[in-house]
Amino acid sequence: MSVQPVAPQETPLCEGSTAEAHQERPDGGIWEHPWFFLGLILLGTMLVAGFFVARIADL
Image (cartoon, rainbow, N blue to C red; front, side, top):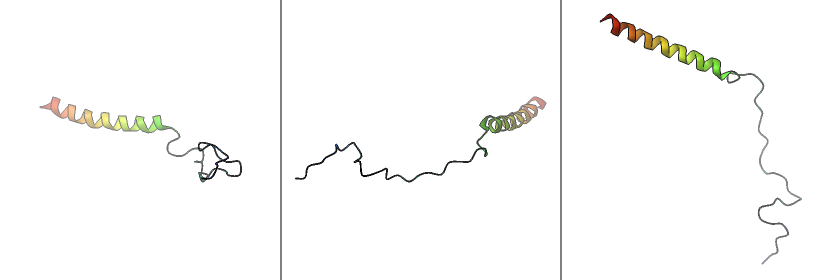
């Protein structure tokens, strides 16, 4: 049986990380201001709900 010079949880000194570097998202983009898009969605749902409330009230 071979002797392991390094504990199993540690990375040997001669090896680096085997994971590939990921590309970082550039600044900006659609998710830069999520509250704006959440507000648009909520506004749309309120308008649709208001339409149905007005139809029910008209009966």
